[in-house]
Image 1 (spheres, rainbow, N blue to C red):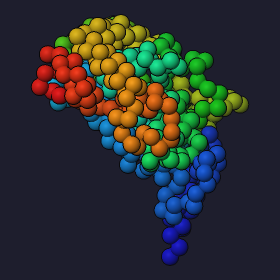
Image 2 (image 1 turned 90 degrees about the vertical axis):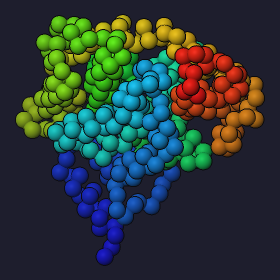
Image 3 (image 1 turned 30 degrees about the vertical axis):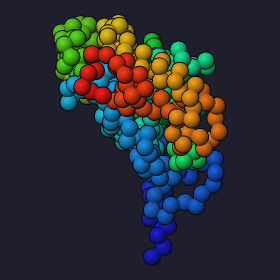
Image 4 (image 1 turned 120 degrees about the horizontal axis):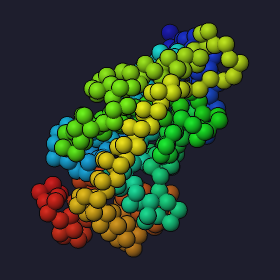
Amino acid sequence: MDRNMVRLRLEKAELSFSPYAMITTRSKGREVNEEPCPLRTGFQRDRDRIVHTKAFRRLKHKTQVFIAPMGDHFTTRLTHTLEVTQIARTIARSLNLNEDLEEAISLGHDLGHTPFGHVGEEIMGTLVPHGFRHNHQSLRIVERLENHGKGLNLNWEVRQGIVNHSKPRGDFLGENVPADLTLEAQICRVSDAVAYLNHDIADAIRAGVLYEDDLPLNVQQALGKRHSERINNMVCDIVESSWACTEENNEVNTIPSIMMSHPVRQALNELRGFLFENVYLPEGEKEESKIARDVLTFLHTHFSKYPEEIPEEYWVRQDSPQQMAVDYISGMTDQYALRAAERLSPGISGKVFAGRV
């Protein structure tokens, strides 16, 4: 048997996708040409490369919102990533788009997140002269840092989806979506929001910060009152509102995009604003957040001054000491950052994290 027959069969099956789907044979390809895998399409291969990275494995010990929580059931970056992937694949499958591309983008979208959740990214942004954005760091990881500094050589569409998944505050389904963004990348953007809005509510309730009835009445009426109900209503609404992406009964002579109905979109934006005001921003005022700020500031100052203490793997690209420090610190898990800071400056983690470092 010719093993390439497997990949060719998979690529042939992609021809049955929506004409708006991104399929392997239409990909812009990799920066460095490679022999195709005999058993996997290019996007399947990209997915597997991401899953086997060290950055992906570290996600299990990185905070989503609540810093270094003691409870076992708080969301981590890894569980968030898996939830995004599940939601995104459901939408892509329903719209007859490319699930493999969807999965690769979703699994790689948060690789560049810092320790200590949203607070960590905010802190890093103040320490780095050109600012810090986790989506750009995710792209840097897959292009330059992983695989001993060689990068993963992913297909262009996967890299495009990863770097464009991040959303500004406000109505992110408005005019902020890049014109050439694939439908699969658009799905990752919206699935990211569906996932984090709902699990952040669950975590806030678990932490005693919110009660279910605290959610705005309009949000409860439009999206539902329970976790599973909200996710189901959002996902079904996205599929129904984006049905033109399947080309079934598409009467509009324009390229479709991933949409939400006006009531659900309005409720999602209201919920997002509510969580910023009641969960995300107040979280930054807590003692844990202040200690996280001290820890990251100290680590950045220390490793910028003593780059020889940065692991050898960060030296292979011959970047500046400041860039190596950013790459090293942003890749740390919460616990590793606390341990590193405590080793270099005993007592810096304070009583809040006593016994956890």
